[in-house]
Length: 265
Image (cartoon, rainbow, N blue to C red; front, top):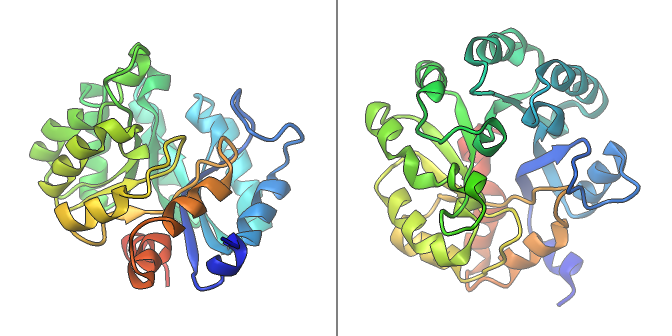
């Protein structure tokens, strides 16, 4: 398959990527410009980005980098600001202060980095804020069937109680639970909640999952994401192109579902 030629049929929104360097950054000669250039090369029109500085706890450095990126990239990058459950008030103050100054796309949480379960009371100020403002939350999720205890903190099924208390929350399950062996349980969970979505970024590539989501949870729930620069965008492009969907459904995964959710014109 000529991936770039096949991709020429579609518009793309990357619903999950990053700027900044972390320990698992893929590119040895990292630069923000290199990441954005690769996004554009593979037809990504809007990159929904959270900065790794915020994900790893430096909320001030996050804002500095986001404001710099906003000036440099304009509306081709939409920003998610990080909520750190260890410091709820400061996190929400930062989000409220800066959301109107950037192309704001929602809030990102990374519970393993905060040593908090997704159902921790520390997240309840966030659920209240998001429910009151209609803000989209992207929550890092992973399979509980892992030897890594930090990943068990991010089991998406832990969101059952918050969604019971705040049924209109709009939540993206980043990585969709992380492993193909866990997808069936996560899809069933998503089926029961109208405003929960699945982002298939990360290190699991399973093309049959997109049809499963459409058939069991309904169309409109799957989002294309990459997790750049931790992962190579080509894997995730191929994951959708190799799925047993027709081009109309691929276009929904690549672009339309995210455009509707985030309100991108």
